Image (cartoon, rainbow, N blue to C red; front, side, top):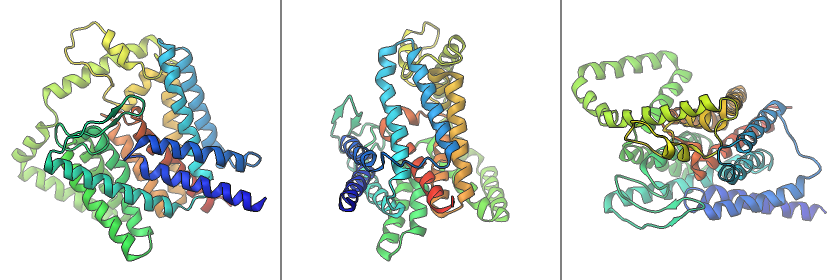
Length: 385
């Protein structure tokens, strides 16, 4: 019996590590890995699942319930219920990572290796204008270069969001992972990530990482943080023309018009369906049917928060915010390097989500919830007695 249990644990671990490694490279293999891990995880732990801290898991279940209501009262139920299984998978993924017992350092190692592959490939694409288009509708896989750098996540903004999630964990890996080889790998990943981040020209991604760096400095030494803010302010004041040219590249009237147009559509939908929203993944349908003066309309709301309000209503929106805030409190209460790294990754996602839709793209959404699971697992195993 013990041999069988160890065998199940081994398969679960291999499935999780395959998921972590292949997620940004080949999502279908990643999904296959996590589904395999889930099957053996539940066979192994069907009689004794640990749901500590209980408040976090209750909040996550409440969020799942409100997303179900959103699908049930959707303006297009078939579309919403087609999306709902991915929310179930996100909940199970978070539970799997948190309760599987897989060593956090092994997960970090796979994140570092896959991150190096992705960022290196992204730089090669940028330098060579390499263009290979491979697309699938189910998992949204795209290898292509059109403008700037795209790597394996199909466009520069998504790539920048991936880097925002990855960089805090890469920084933690530099501190946590043992051995000169792994520390050099973590350092290379950080260097490549910063190069790629600037090549994406993603204003939201660059701002999110900049805020995270300032936040980290303030936590470490608030006096140094104040000095850094004053120094940056001085640089801005003495280089207003250059800085103005830089920001205008990302805040053009067309870009602002796009966001206000999509937000106007989303808010109008919230007014009609305030509690449960218009339904999961229905913003594109609403946007295409919207009859107004706006000439620019996209298939997403250009804001994770606006899209959550539109599609899941106030109930789903506040359930999500409560769950994330609770997660951050647990991570900072734990206070370990890995829990801090997970917290910073999620904070980075929240910042990037002001003008992006991280949760709408399956690989990024799965990485988001996997990091949540990693942080809760760290809290449970090392802090709760």
